[in-house]
Length: 419
Image (cartoon, rainbow, N blue to C red; front, side):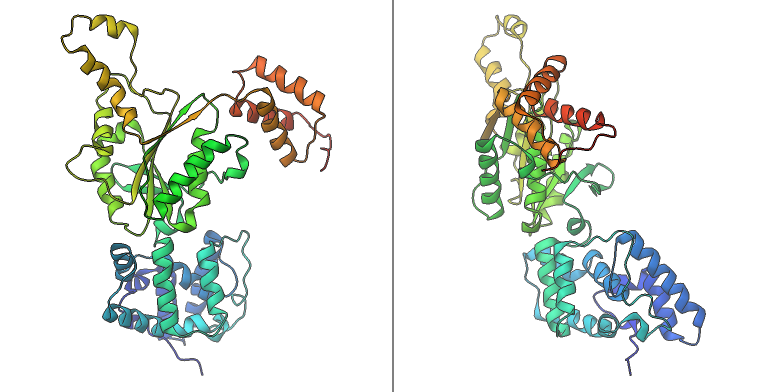
């Protein structure tokens, strides 16, 4: 006979007690004669399955979702100590898994009067690699101690809550980190050309993830050459290695000390602070916050944080010939000139992106068309690509992608050529 679990016995995972779905389950398990309660629980579980993309044994899938997303003292301890938890804390965590064990081992029909939830298929299934590994473990012989250790390892590798669920974040001055749910799924294989630039960027990032010395990076050069896309690709490529992207805006540079302190708490993860399309007027004070954070602040930058910025301008602070003429009577004119270039100099690695040549530009178009099942002859590719370049903002990766979008949109009912 299946043992009836009592969720009020939980020690570490007491956040489960305030979960609406599990509250409904707990009420039914305490009073199984209240048949209406089991249907209320099932209805809420189905709602959660469709919202979260859960599949299979729905009760097990939902519990795993909560265990990996609800903050608890074990997940916080793992983050703070980079994986170490005390024997006493581990024992308390194992106790909680023992409380939940019947719900994790048995199909929902062991507690309910129907089998609908035993092998549920939602409209859209979503499962991260980490969750898939835990699901696979529960399909094999396991013990509460082994599952507790596997969850601790999950917290170390992927984090808990939003840090686990999202690859990228934006910063909100009121609420802090906000996960970006629909983050662009770009990979380095989608970026054509610029092999040297991508290699430099990846090598520096891999050194950072391995705990070796790594530099802050400035990606500079022509517009539309894939600078921003390259940084975004890092978050997709190295998510499972603990890399997360945090995009901040220029006005938020004044909040850098608070942002750094927030990220410092997630010691087992690595963060890239991403500043896109960065440049300053000399009268804008924000650049001084950035200079101080990169190098020069009394408080050291966290070891798990780097700053990556993109810009069309090599020297991030705008300077004109008028500025130089206006300062002709300045006693220490060289000091002012050094001030305008000192910010970019604090980025240890500067990667330059030039505009693509004609062949590289056409290769980008050809790649994206083939990805959509369309092949143009070399002559048609050259004529159409060149015409689009002349009618638009020049030759770059963004212009190439815009041509592909236009071409595919204008195909109407024509069947694309297949590979």
